[in-house]
Length: 142
View 1 (cartoon, rainbow, N blue to C red):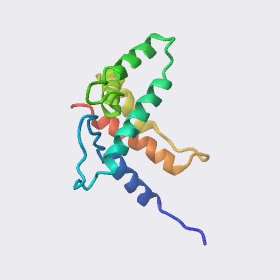
View 2 (view 1 turned 90 degrees about the vertical axis):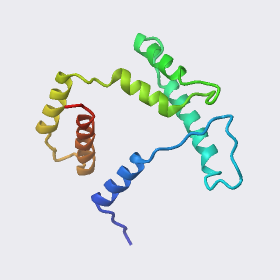
View 3 (view 1 turned 120 degrees about the vertical axis):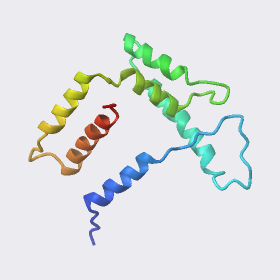
View 4 (view 1 turned 30 degrees about the vertical axis):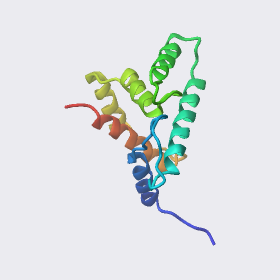
C-alpha cells in the first residue's frame, strides 16, 4: 500500500523544524541526571561541532572570501565552545553576506513576482523557493 503525504503537511513539519532553536550547551556545563534533556544536550553539542567542521571543509581557502568565512567561523571558538558554535557561525555569515540594501530588496521582490513554475519543476521545490524569497524579504526593515 502506497502512503501519500500532502504538500501542506510536509510544509508544516518543515516550518516547525526550522523554527526550533537548538540549544548548544557549554563544554564546561554539567548535565544533571534530573535534566529531562540529558541525552539531547550532548548530541546537540556534537552536531554543532560537526556542523562547524562541515562549514570549514566546504571553504575554498585559496580565495579571499574563503579566508574571510574561515575567520568568521574560527571566531566562534571560545572556552565554552572549543570547536566552535554552528549557530553563532551561521549568524555571523548571514550578517556578513546577506545584503540589506534597497536594491537587493527590489531584486528579491522582482524575483518573487516574476517567478513562474515550469512543467518539469516539482511544485514542492517551487513553493520552497518562493517561501525562501518571502522569508528573506520579511527580514528587511521597511
